[in-house]
Length: 566
Image (tube, rainbow, N blue to C red; front, side):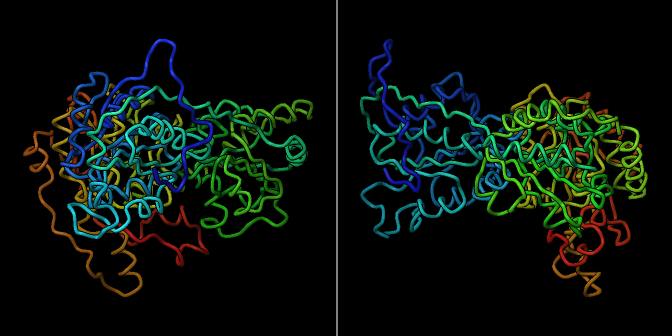
């Protein structure tokens, strides 16, 4: 076995009292490992190198295999499954070009700290490293995937497959979550070995250093205008964060991954646009499970004398962000530590009214962003409170960061800082696969939708009833807006699109059209009732005057650092 992270020393082969070692092929052992981890869905496209794996999956009734039309969709669907559930999303693609096609999804898993596991293959072991030009050969697949994953291994001994699969899940979910890869070469997959069961010692979450917690609590207790900023690493700490926010009477601000940790209809639940209105008066910032992108990138000026307390499970984040007090540990446990340390602090008077006023001011300004805010309001009105919303790299997706109310963590699905155009629709299919009875809405631009439009076939075939709203401006709109603003014209950004309604119907999906927010509201209601994969196309001419970026990149940085895609 070769890997850039060897199997954990906590892994140990353990013969169950009730089960003697079994003789299995490596493919069967890999699937047995998935069963052991509680996997119920695998997204994948088989190929000659993975026949044995897919045959083993076919013979496992507890796992549904959802086949896609492109490898990128396999990784994206696993991303959506995992981000919306907190459980690892699993996918399988062929080696070489298949892995490379899926790499954008794995890179996005890394960016969003989302646990995914890829099962792939390799060329036959006798040809590895020889450069003979075997089918799907990559010069060094192990090194390549290691560069954009958290952990990867190539297994050359069938007996090591159970341990490798167990370690892949431990790595994907332990510490800062992320993508892991297990590659089992073509010839190894079919070989049989005696496979004793494998167990891993459970990874134990830990809190932060006691003295550091005391220093942080002292700073928070003395704060005049504290702010709590949350990211995806705080999703599982939502109860403690709300209690801490009430204790401190502090707004809880999120950009993308932390949306819904404190509901937007709670007086302390702030979007990034509302949070910016409070930023200049903030004297102590408590950041929990976030890279603090708002602080070092999106918001123009750091308040003078700002004290920062950073909570993160990844110790590297303390070195990157250089907070006043760094608290390294599981966010739920550390938040509980802070609550305990603050229990004797004087009770603060309620600031709900004051903070509600700040939110209302931001809401009035956002309402002037037309038609973006009106279309998002129409979607929110029909989308059930517990429905799922998948953003996309598009004008409407950017606006959703701050103009769409979110009420629960994991219900706003994002690609994070990768900003990879076209991820949204296939990712939404993975969300729907995980939540069959929920309403899942994907918003996208016309350019991004065409990256994965073939997955309409996947949606129809597997009953993944995602509602996709395509805002059509006939261009890679955000790039074109930049080009016109800078150069006076566009270049390479104009698009000739199909009739999206007719195209949806040709796949067997429901196709609808809406030209106003009111019509979108009606179309959304029809789509929810239909319980079919649905595409709603909305013509939305590009406007240089109405841009969501004035809310995402306030004044002084907006011109220097706008995004690069649709």
